[in-house]
Image (cartoon, rainbow, N blue to C red; front, side, top):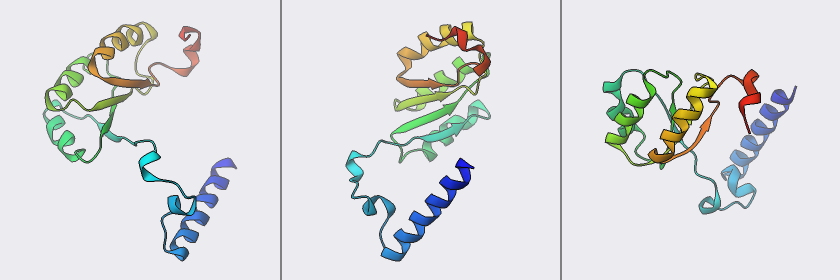
Length: 129
């Protein structure tokens, strides 16, 4: 039900913004320079696609990278860092075991990674702080 309420609310604000010929953020008197920066999500397919995907994300200051394949993740991140030094957010999609997540996040700390989302399955929360 909450999703329906949210969808209706967004549609209503969008309609009102169009009627007033203003973007929604102006209806709330928000300043764009004070808004949090969003990220551009990169889903990695093949390593040789990384450069192209980084180029497509050029307008964005922050990249969100989908990882979660422990055997390839370090290689993927190394290749990304060959192409850009932008801030990166990681979404591992619950793809790591807790021990892997702990070891890998230590390595990621030196890679200008802002945070890691969903590093391991949610039912393993006893491994969190």
